[in-house]
Each structure stands twice: as C-alpha cells, then as structure tokens.
Length: 316
Image 1 (cartoon, rainbow, N blue to C red):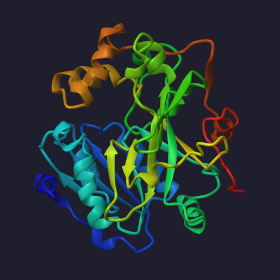
Image 2: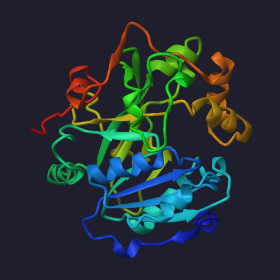
Image 3: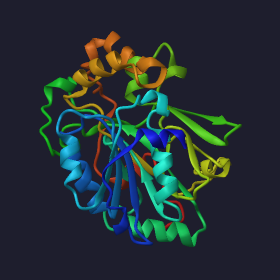
C-alpha cells in the first residue's frame, strides 16, 4: 500500500498485543490538551492497545503519546486530505495488526458510549457481539456543547470535556438511506441548526461505525461513516425494529475550537477544502452559542436510549 510509505515508526510496541486484545486506531494533530483524558477514558473502557498516527504535531502531544507503554506510534508529515483524511494510514495499520481483533476507530474528540458502558467493559460488548455473530457496531455522533459561547468555558489540559460541554440536541435529526452502500445517513444536531439551516444536505454526517471485528480485506470508505464490504454497514435495523447501537459523544466544541477552525481553514486538509470550518468562520467567528431552550443536559447512556439516540436492542 503506497500510503504506508508515508509513515515512519516512532515507537512500535505491537509485539505486546495479545490475541484477544481490543485495539484503538486514531490519527491526531496538535491534540496535547485532549490526549491525557482521551487515553484514560479508553483505558477505563477496556482498550488494551492504541495504534496512533501523529500527523506532524508541534504542540508536544506526540511526546506524551510516545511515552505510553500501551501505545504504538507512527509519524507522518504527509497531507491529511490526500490520505483520505487519515483513513489510508489507519487502513494499512488495521490490515497489518487488527486482523481478527475488535478494533475501535475514533478521533481524539470522540468518546464511545454503548449500552451498559457504566457497568460492562468493552470486552463484554465484544464477546456479546461475537456470540451474536455481529461484525460491526454503529454509533451516532452526538455534538456536545456548553451553555453560552464556546470560548467562555475554559478547557484545561486533561479535563473531562463534558463537565462544561454537557449539552446536546435531542431532536432535529434526519435519516436517509444510501442504497449503494446500504448504510443510513444521519444529519442534524446543533451544527445543522446553526451553520447549515439553509443548506441542510451539506451538514456533517453523524452516522459512524467505530467498532468492528476487523479482517484484512475491510476498509473504511469515508471516514468511519461506512465500510466495505457493504454488509458491515447494516448496523441499524432498516425495517422499523431496533439493533443494539451506541453514541460517540463529540467534544469538538470546547474553547480551543476557534483557534482550530482558523488553523484548519488555512491548511485546507479537511473535506471539501475545509468547507465545514469555513461555514463556522462565516457565522459568529467560530465562537457559537449552541444552547437553546430545547437543549438537553447529558446524564448517561440510559437517557440517550430513552431519547431514541441509541438502543440496547436485545442485549440484556
């Protein structure tokens, strides 16, 4: 794979991966503030080994990651957009190290929530999915935000972002079917409400398939929104029933957001030349106040299930 040549090894600890280990794959750039909490959150959830790609950070975050005994780290200066927004780098690593493992693929600002996550580790979910002969697990991306302007809520290195960014939209979501790849396409939430009200079809996709029993032929097609082979995309019951599903709490909107938006517009490495970030800057200078009278404050996964944003299905 040509994109593999763009990666250089910083620390390879993959020899420590056990046959039943749950693996996490992630690409990051300049995430020093988020990384301590991110790593601890997923360790507590049950991730055994992290395989991470540093896209040329200059804020010290890569040094933190490199010192972790449960992390294998690669570095690249190559263009994020030209690698299908990091997918090509991770696909190479997944093909080499994740075969026959449950693999979680997330960004540093995404936090996996699934039924019974407060009492059952990821291994319990993986074992149940194996017993049910299920190979992939869906989760809706749920944008979280503070009450008031994003910049008014200080976020310190290592903090739990949901202490301040604890609100979300319970409704205003739309679902369409992608008949070619067989997945559901979910849009809506605060970003659609604030930035894409006049162009809803351009709002960010919220459907994700982050947890997969990986096999070498597998590949993500567009971020973690959909996969090949197509059968892996059937993570929701499309005939009116319910399949077990989760949520990715999205901690994008903390007080570092304005600086990040300006940087990403300048880099133009995200989808459509960073068109999403340009939309943010065009409205309120990337310092939005998403809160409204319909906002809900996050409590736990059971609340999200009662609102219909995830489901425990038949996992009792």
